[in-house]
Amino acid sequence: MNPPASAKLYRTISLRLLPILFVSYLINFLDRVNIGFANLSMSASLGMDSAAYGFAAGLFFIGYFLFEVPSNLALYRFGARIWIARIVFSWGILTTLTAFILHPWQLFALRFLLGAAEAGFFPGIVLYLTWWYPSAMRARILAVFLSAIAVTGILGGPVSGMILSSSHGWLGMADWRWLFLLEGTPCFLVAAWIFFALPDKPADAPWLDAGSKRFVEDGLRAEENERRRMGAPESALSGLCQPAVWKLCAIYFCQAMGLYGLTFWLPEIVKELGWKSPMQIGFITAIPWLVAVILMLVFSAISDRYGARRVPAIVAAAMGAAGFFLCLVFQNPVADLAAISFGAGGVLSLIAISWSFPAALLSGAAAASGIALINSVGNLGGFCSPTLIGLLVKRTGNLEDGMLLTGTFLVLAGILYYAFKSLEPAATRGSAERR
Image 1 (cartoon, rainbow, N blue to C red):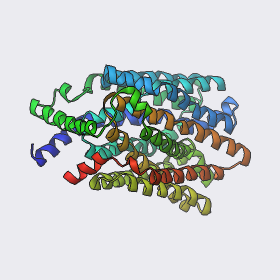
Image 2: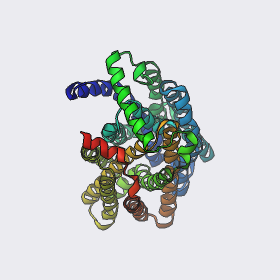
Image 3: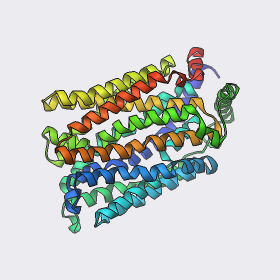
Image 4: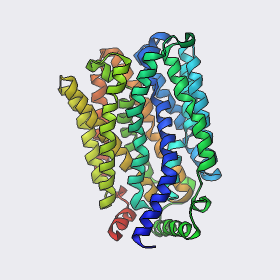
């Protein structure tokens, strides 16, 4: 197949797959982090302090950690369509149930269960994309998928702000309860969409002809054979034992400290900058995410274009850290907002590039287990970050130490990428050279 025809084929695949995956992740991330907006009134309603809120926000990732690897292996065994639809349906139930809690311990329990329900979704999608796209395209494709995080902030912030501003007292329910109820129910529609529209692999896609299916599968098979020739592990157990996997676990932990320090506390950061009403906070929080999605797409395109991963990742980590640190320097709300916007751009760019590594280093069941392990261990940063920031806010009364903490971990992520030179996969370099 000539290059123009190949490009057209992958555009067709992207137009079929990415809308489903993008919307799924948008809903996923919204239901994971909308507790940040709910907290503008929820903690007072439930009698929680900042430390209890931070613990509740982070407890999600304990359930996530415990069930991530088995969930991703189940996806590998049963297929993406059935398993991802099950995941989305499950978290929809738990998000809507959060609207009816009466005590903090109920919130803690549901946050843990929500993490267990969502386990396997993100690494499952990363694995799923390796069944469709060659390695030279994955950073860009992952960036489009991951941009749902930013779009969640761009759209979810204003929507959450409007719900909080307009729903108080409806049917005798508090505004934060309506937030969970209205943002949880779309999951059921998305789950049905996935079940009926998402093919497991190219061979299952009714909208591809036989020649197109063969072209995609032959290209992926050639890459897998090359990884095997270079000694890439294939069994589920070997994927858990690779030094490269544990290096990526450490890096992703640092990235998650930055990402969730931002997402769970951004509404409070904006509130401290001087914007007070839920509506204002909702619209202002959209700005950092808008900047982030632009920067992430640029970084990922550069990474794919030159077949380089480590150097763009180091630059993105440095930019993210600089954004958080500059928030401590400026004493102007507009300058602080600009700094946090570049911080958000650095964090998301770093994450988009990082997920190109494991798929290029692992094959088969090893990819399923390795990707899940990286995401589960790394996302323990999602527990530590909001929990530690909550304790710091309780002690100091402001978020400055929290910004210092998240920026420091992004610096550490950049240092680890610099130190782990062996993570740059030769297969990625070769793909770039052949192009």
